[in-house]
Image (cartoon, rainbow, N blue to C red; front, side):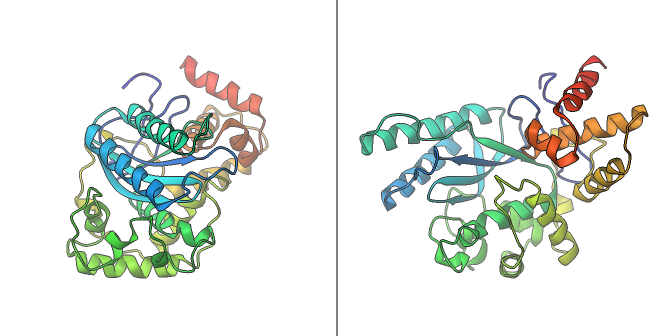
Length: 310
C-alpha cells in the first residue's frame, strides 16, 4: 500500500476509511461501487442490455478474483457491492465499464461516453454500515419509484437474500447472511423483516445525500441490536488496525467541533483532519465537506497540508 492510501480501522470489526486522492484498493476491502450514465441518458434499453451487464459483472469477478455481494441495475445507473481478494479494483472497474460502453455504443450505433465520469467508491469497514448498503441497494428500485415493492424488480439480488433457496450463482450472498445467522433460513427471515421495515426509512439518493448509509447503519443498530450476532466471527485480515470512529462516534465529533468557533488546539485540528478523511472515504468532495462542516475550502486545504507535513 502506498503512502497516499491511509486506512484507519478498529479491530472489533469492519470500519470505513476514505482515500483522498485515488481509489482505495487492497485485499479484503469491501466497496460499494456506483456508476451513472451521462446526463439523463439510459444505460439499459432492453432486457438483453441488463443481461449483458450481468454477464460482464460475472466475467469481471472471475477474471479479477472479486466476490460480488449484491447489486442493483437501475435504468441509468448501477450499484455493485464487491469484496476484493487482490489489489486490482481500479483495473477491474475500468475493464467492466469500458466493455459495457463498447457494447452499448456498437449496439445502438452511437458515439461518445456512455458513463458520466469515473466510478464512485465507498469503502466499507463497519458491519452495520455493510447491512445498510445491502439494504439500500435492494430497496433502490422502490426509492426510485420504479416499483411498489422490492420483490417486483427483476434486476437486483433480492431473491438471493430473501427466498428460501440456495441457488447456484456467481453472487456470494452467503457473506452477509452468514453475519446475521449461520442458519440461512433464519437469516433470510430477519433480512426480509429488515427490508420491509427499512422501506419506511426516508432514504435520499446516495449520490446526493452521502450520509444516508451512516444514518441507516445507526438506525439498524438501534432498531435491530442483535441482527449481527455472528458478525464478530469474521476476520478482516490486513484491514484490522486501531483508531477508527464508527458512525455514531463520527457524529459526536462533528457536533463537538461545531460548537467551537475557532480551533486552536492541535488536538481539535487533528480531529477535523480526521473528519476530512472519513468524509472523503464516504464519497464527499471538498466542496461538499466544506458545506457539511460549515468551513471554507481554504481551511480544508490548509489542514490537509498540515497533515502532509507531519
